[in-house]
Image (cartoon, rainbow, N blue to C red):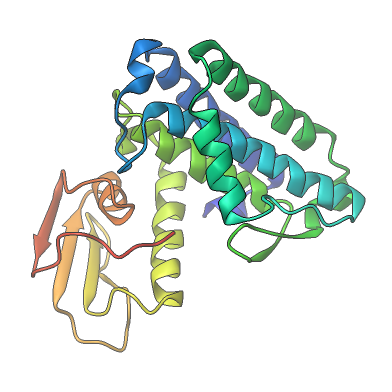
Length: 239
């Protein structure tokens, strides 16, 4: 059973667990350490916290769209999204933490009060995908669990629930397939069957290891715990 096989309440529970995990990691970062680097090139922790906060606000707009039927995009443009994060990173530490807390509370309220009939309403993501409003649970789940690791202060893919790891791997491989990336790449999770990313190309590289390590590698967060055969060291981009 994958994430999307769960009912909405169960999906939201996992998203909230991820939010709590991110909040715990953030609480352990001192105000002065917010200036430190993340696992994302070019972003400080300030940028990352601003991004996670504004992502919650953007998902609120999708839920407003679902509830009202009035198109409300996540962001006006990619440029506006970038400016918002850059400006958010200049906030004081207290204001930045408040941004995170406030947007988390807003998103949770939107989820709690969304009419049952609106969960199937179609909305459009920042990548242009048309999805039901229920997809916001997965979008947020992915965001908070992965970015908790990106804070670089002890978050681990090994802390993720297995259902999140398995669904992330399915998501990532699906993105590679849609973009026609990963030709010749074979992924093997301990105890599982090898999976060819592109089934019409001969195998040239293989990445293997336990589930958390393979997902960490596939998400572009390092090679710890994986065995790599072939010349490929970095995974294809997926987002």
